[in-house]
Image 1: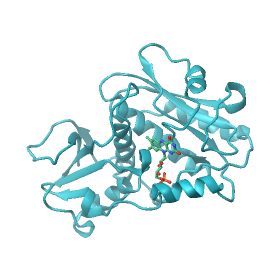
Image 2: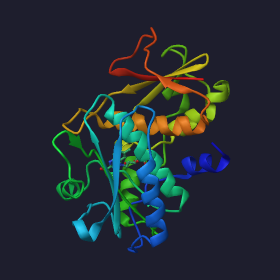
Image 3: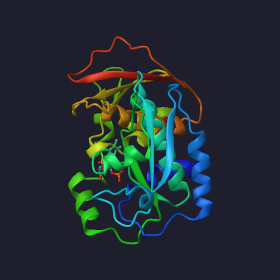
Length: 266
Ligand SMILES: Cc1cc2nc3c(=O)[nH]c(=O)nc-3n(C[C@H](O)[C@H](O)[C@H](O)COP(=O)(O)O)c2cc1C
């Protein structure tokens, strides 16, 4: 990852207030190119579509001035949530690199209109969608209130999310070595209601990722596992292809409600 990708991850914020302009042709073209090629290391295809709000009657009670949305569907195979979050985050970061705003919406959207637009088949789900467009200069009052309510500009301290060897020892960022900035990018990832369910244990040249499961699963899957997929995208982008993910749970004692997800090996 070059410095600019690092900056994009660190500067990204959810955008819920847009100018009301439709995406221009050039942006439509580059988004369509990007979403048709986005893939993930979990081998689960995620299908994106760029949609016109007007054409499909798409809306969200928390969004102002959005003329376009991106939505994605996926088959409910094992780990679909990880792949879904991973791909969605890459698309949002790509949008941010073009100066476009997004916010992943799992709950506050006109779901049936989105699902119709996405032509879901029996075995597919659409856990989320996002507006995509030009951010307004000033946030709506509702957006400002939401950000305050969600504490959207805050995150749990580094040493309470990440651990050294076992869940007993908080990891000091200064001692996180080559993983420090990638873990910081995990910390600032977006998550449903800003719950930040990611936990990680550093173990030599490995980082084991876990999910602290607080929210219940629904027919759309485990939304917090989507959050973990998002975090893994940030982590991997920051590690610049210097390693890969394996699924091999280490013998580390886990706190309650904490589930092993995957391990990044340098
Ligand atoms: C999986 C997921 C689902 C989300 N669902 C909603 C939603 O339904 N409505 C909403 O306004 N924001 C939603 N968000 C946005 C989060 O509230 C936001 O990411 C979080 O508060 C942190 O703020 P930030 O993205 O500006 O850093 C969702 C985010 C994620 C990752």
